[in-house]
Image (cartoon, rainbow, N blue to C red; front, top):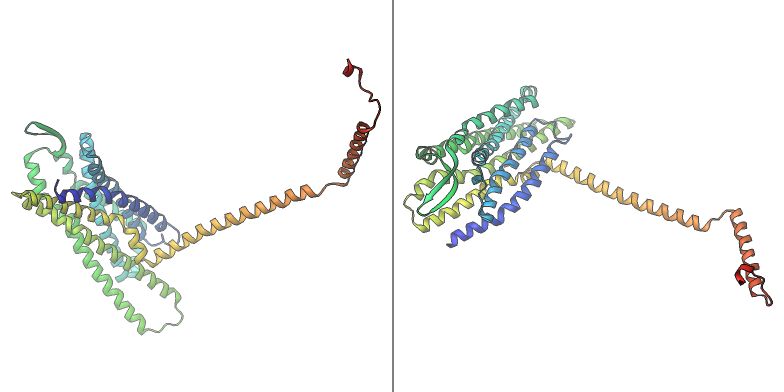
Length: 380
């Protein structure tokens, strides 16, 4: 095994577990924060919640398979024909869906920034659901060729045989390796890249223009308008960061998939080893986009950070109140026990006094000299 293969194998074994754990916590916590009452009023949160769900699917289909294959040399796609087809299709659909959710939320943000009055009326949660559904259906259909062209096959290489999730025909292999990477690049990265860049330019231009206009207009008592502008700016900044990270993380793997066929053709063993290492790097980089969105929300979204602080304050307050209540209960129980031990009713004191006198008389009888009268049955 070359040094490149060893490095690639170490990265594929060591990085995915951390990314899966962090990505699971981050996406689930993001869903919780985005669905809270104070922040879920914005329709953009609908897209971001769907984005977090899609990212979870990506992590547990694509990245988990990468780690299992590298650690246990067991490709889950080779178990059955159905898993081979469905798993491959699901990875492509979920990755494309995450990209186009960002396009949808960017388009809505452009509408809200440039046409705020009309957009507030038309951009509702029902509209968001109406936009998300056809996007998902379109991506399912355009990737459906995988059900036809990929299957669990037995490959014979000399005297050795192996089971792989592979192409069912040579013509489909040519399509998947020569033509499909260009289509996939267009769907997964090309078109989203154009839409995201254009949308961000429009958003930034309008935000800066609005800020200049606001500075010129002196409105001493307009807290509502100031709050709305702050919320708009916060969401725009957070969306801009999400888009930039997406473009940085997904562009390398798209370029790799297009160039791999040409680079691998007639390549030396050293070149193949380098390609293996590059594939691992761009693969991990692509999944990083689905892992660290929670950090982007925290770093760039002031409303998101504020809601996170509220959640943690509530948790700490409940914890402190629980400890305080428990301590008070212990003090109360301790005081009650001490009161029971020290406070004795008058009649009980008299009864105890009488009992003590009888006990003293009995002891005095035992200690007097002379004959002690006992029961006859004792003597016999």
